[in-house]
Amino acid sequence: MKHLPRIIKTKKMTNKIMLLIVSICTLFLNTTFGQKNGKLGVGDIAPEIRFSKWLKGPQFNTFDPQQIYVMEFWATWCGPCKQAMPHLTELQKQYKGKVTFVGVNVWEKISKGESYETVVPNVEKFVRGNDTNMGYTVFVDNGEQHMGNNWLKAAGQNGIPASFIIKDNRIVWLGHPNGLDTILPKVLDGSFDEKAFKAEADKNAQKEREYMEARMALFNPIQEALLAKDHKKAFALMDKLTTEKPEYKKMMDITKFKTLLTEIDERQAVDFAKEALVTDPSISSLLLAEIYKVDGLSNETYIWLADNFPEKDKITNPLVADAIATCYAKGGNFENAIINQKKALEIAEKALKEGTMVGTVMDYTVQEYKDKIALYKKGELK
Image 1 (spheres, rainbow, N blue to C red):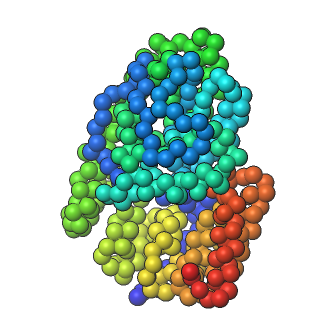
Image 2: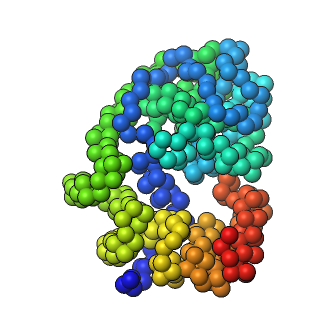
Image 3: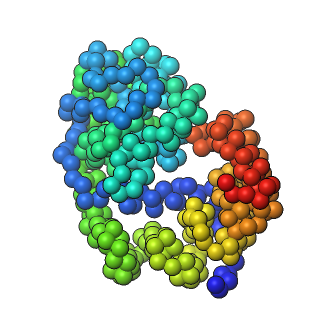
């Protein structure tokens, strides 16, 4: 296999790895594109609650008309969702007895044909690790993703975190949780202008639906070709899209790379990466996010990426250091795997002590890193 050129440094790239990869992962999540739902908005009766597992808090199936509810939709991969958790916990304490906060887990990544219930163990582990930061009720969407489809998508909410305020069994407000501080007091004292908000919310929801329909027209043909394993057609459609809309080039490049790597040929994938890096060095973070998860690649591929990942001495995200350590270990270089795993452990322990990286670094994260170091010292992966 050809040696690839050293990856060019890009400022602050290592801290953005998870944010960048999320945009790629969510492009083809489950059946996000091609699925249409009825409109749902302010003033409507709140949809039914369905779940696969109730993880925290008193269970209920219907809304008490005497109680106000905040339905907060989130996922374990969503950085802004995790950042909002401590403040939601504070709000639950502040409004105890008046408002019930409910974290609704949605949109975890699953394979086509899988039930959403398969994510329950990982979500449950996440919630246990964040028990203090998630001081409110939590449940997981049901197998058919009822909550994601009949709440979020129906309301034109195509991103998370997203919050719904329920009063008298009706939706009186929906939006980003940042708005709860100013909205909740008004809802509680009756001064909230629901009519004015509804007019604006309906307008924004219509714009979002039109935007998503336009995206569906762009991405559905690519998704269908990929699912049908018609790679030639899929790649041609990707090339056509990036020619017409260059802003999607990074997204299409990493999708093409992942397809080459996991479904076609490793050499072709690496050669493609070589060309892509020339025009956009920042995708090195995305390459790392894809390669470290894959087993069975050549040692050369793992070691090349780990050796040449930019600014390893400036990494402040333990997930990045952990991914680099994994590449070294899979490439058979356990000495460097230990060095980088220790770096990941050091960063994680510091974050845990200082209370930073909420939802990303937990007690079990630190233990997992310690276990990896022990394995690498024995020259073992598992």
